[in-house]
Image (cartoon, rainbow, N blue to C red; front, side, top):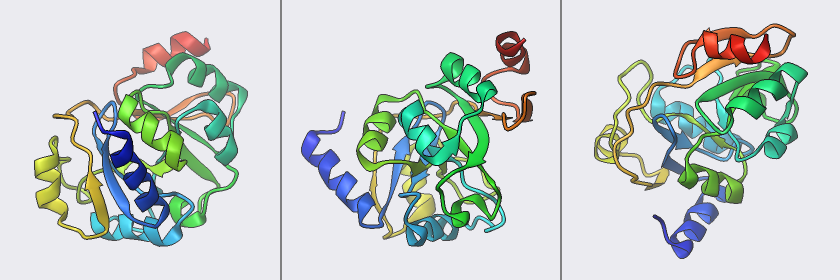
Length: 197
């Protein structure tokens, strides 16, 4: 586990525009302050990710989620049942830059079920939660592999919490009254249907 003093330095670095690689309940993520457009641009650049693809966001609580997105009744039901956990909700954007959303009116938000991630985000505010890899390449499962892949001075620290090789999160659009699964992941469509039906 990371010491308090180390955490304080990481939090300060993120607020100053640096990036961090941190563990989630599925994979390692590349994190930047979502309200810092320059930092978010660095995420796109390091990953070689097209600017036309929105970047998902991690929050530490439903309360923090409501600060950046409009939580629909359907979203509330799924959030209460599956979050924290490997579920990403597509919701209407409230306050996040169009750099993050790729000019879309919606954002992808999740609450990872990982104590390190939750502690970090609670202190820093919402972070990008895109996988720590080069776009369209396999996602490394260890910090050692990620360091060798990125080699970027913009990444201030790599938080090592062992191997991460979980399935990606399930992505569900909940902007209407009917859930639309955009990506199959850890949570099955049957599990989602059972909760909302």
